[in-house]
Length: 115
Length: 110
Image (spheres, rainbow over the protein chains, first blue to last red):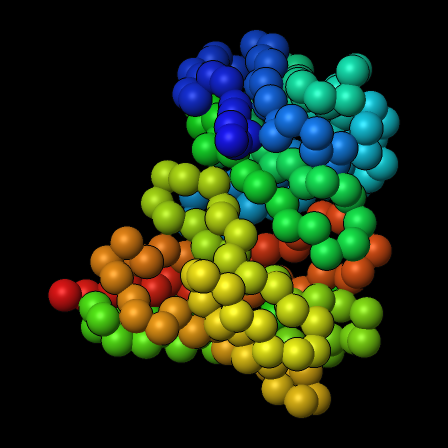
């Protein structure tokens, strides 16, 4: 079946601009996660949704970052007033449920470059 | 979540078994051991997980020591396509996020 998809695959933006990154999870998966990966490092957790609500947003670095999942399926990560330090690959993952031993399935990521 | 320690890199000959170690000496009783890998320019891929018993699936085997303080991921017949960063992660049963370390870069060589 279809896996997790993310759009766009690449995004180049100027410092100070607003960007939106989209994630389409696997159909039927109630849990959705956003991670950020800087060059040479492992992915870093940002936020976790169970259904429509953000169950854990402890990884969001500051209030410029915001994510929504209004219908419990597609999610959008929004970054305001982008900074060069926001450049990274943004990964989305989904799983059947948020807790328990369910594995997370990752998308290919969106590479964000802030110039 | 407990911290894990992995060697930064390993080499393996094509066709041979790749044995990737992971130390998780502070693991608690309600924490699973997960392994993911990340091939260049792709998202991480789930491999296997276990709680206390050894596990095997079509991709790999996971050997967890009796005291659960360390584990080994075994790729029985490594191929060039297994070249990737391998992450060992410890996660509580009721947890949600995965906490990734730096992982082990496995290079499979012909």
